[in-house]
Length: 189
Image (cartoon, rainbow, N blue to C red; front, side):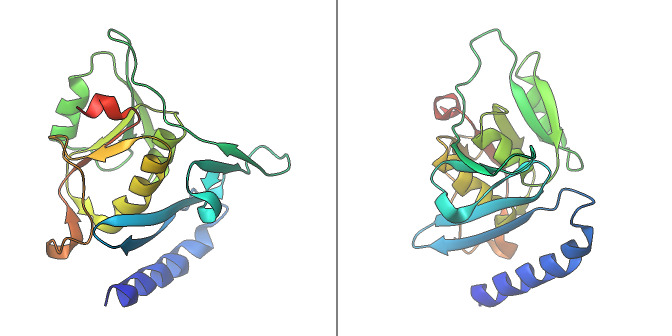
């Protein structure tokens, strides 16, 4: 049943997204649950922001946006800022909520980086931002690929209490109640 759902979701994404390629940042997440909660995934854009691909998911980025020949570069998350320095926080352009705002407010001087869709995970993975909190519900398929990429780059994804996320656990409607993508895993403790 999941394979049918995944295939249907991918077909719908391609049908809806294909006409927009070239005019906006189009994101497709393709995920596969493996065993007891492990995932594989990719985050791919239309090239305007670069791409993270599945050819070597364990920490590589294929840069396509500077006009030069494509090249593979290792990606790594970055350490959290030293005490007293501001955090850079990836925030959604369209999904703000009071809990996430309160979480950001606990980091004085936090600088916001408004990003669309799964690009927020990509920015955490490449060390462009420190953290991406989303303390409101979303679906597993919106999180799983980003989870795989951030984890492969050295980061960590938790709930608001620091517990690991698990996929394929049979939650109603495949809802993930909340998550925080941490560039520096030690900051999640």
